[in-house]
Length: 407
Image (cartoon, rainbow, N blue to C red):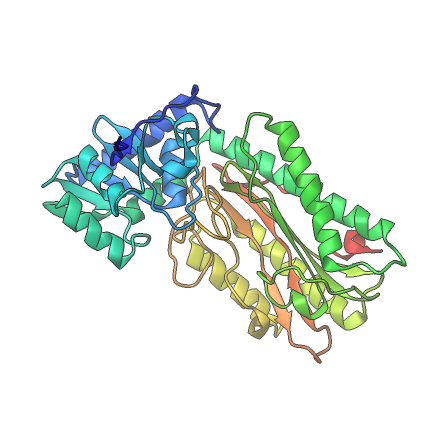
C-alpha cells in the first residue's frame, strides 16, 4: 500500500484559542491593510515576517529554518505553516490556516500560489524576503506586478490602538516587577558571591510569573533579562555572563517581558554598594539628559529634532562623544530577534513627526572606556505614550542614585 502524501492539508485541530486581542482588533488591522492594498491596486499581500504575521493574524510563529506566511486578499486571511506545528497555528490565528508538507521541496510556495493565483499584483516584505525566497515567489506566484509593502505596514503598526496601549502598559508594569525582584536579589545577596546570571534569573522568573498571572490564557515565550556589571555594561545588548560582581561595580539592569509578541523594557543604571564621585557625575548627567529628553516627547516634535536637542544638551556638558546609539525607539510587536519600526526611532536621520497613539522610549546611554574616570555604560529607559498634549510615562520603577545604589 502506498501512502498518499499531499502537498498541503488543513489540520484544524481543536477550537480557536484566545488571541492577544479581540477579533474586532484584527478585523480593524486587516481593514487597514486592505485599504493599503486598494490604494496601490494590489490583489494580495504575502507577509513573511514574524511581526507582520502576528500583527495581522495573531499567530507568532517559530521558524526553525522553515518559511511561514500570512496571505491576505480582499476576502481571505490565511496563515501558511509547517506540519511540525500541527494545529497550533490554526488555534492561535484569526483566520484560515493551511499546513504545507515536507514531502517535496517548495510546497510552501505551492500553497501561497494556490491562495493567490497567478498573474496578480502582489505585495511582499522586501526587508524580510531573502533573494532566494523572492525568486521562488516570482517562480510560483508569477505576479504581474510586485510592490514592497513593508514601509506601509510599518506605518500602520506605528500608531497603536487603545487595546495595544493597554497591553503595552501591562508589559511596562511587568518590567517594573522584574526590576524590583532584581533589586531585592542584590540586597538579599549582600556579602555573597553573586554572578550576573544569578541576578538575571531572579528578574526573569519574577516577570514570567507575573505575565502568567495577568494573562492566564496566553502563550509564554521569550521573556529575558540582560543584567550586566563592570566592563560588561559598555554595550546595551551585551549578553549575561557568569562574572562575579564586586563592591563598587557599575551595574546595568535590563528587564524585557514579552507578552504575545509585544516587547517592553525597563533599563536602569545601578551601583553595587557604593558609587565613586567620578561615576556619580556621569550618572547624574545622563539622568538629566533622560529627564530633558522625556520633556521633549510631544505631538508635533520630530525624531531628528528631539535627537538634535539632546545632542546639544550633552555637547554643552562635553559628553556627546560618549553617546553610542539613538535615544529611543517604538514599541509594539518586536523583539531582539524580529521586528523593528525603524521609522520611529530617535536618530538624526529620521524625520517622523510624533503623533498621539505612538509609543516610544527615552533611553540615553553614555559609555566611558575602561581606565577613564567613571568608566562603564550608563543607561536609563522609560516608555512613553504620546498623548494629545504631551506624553504619559508608563514606567514606574525609579531611576537615579538615590534608589539604585544597592547591595
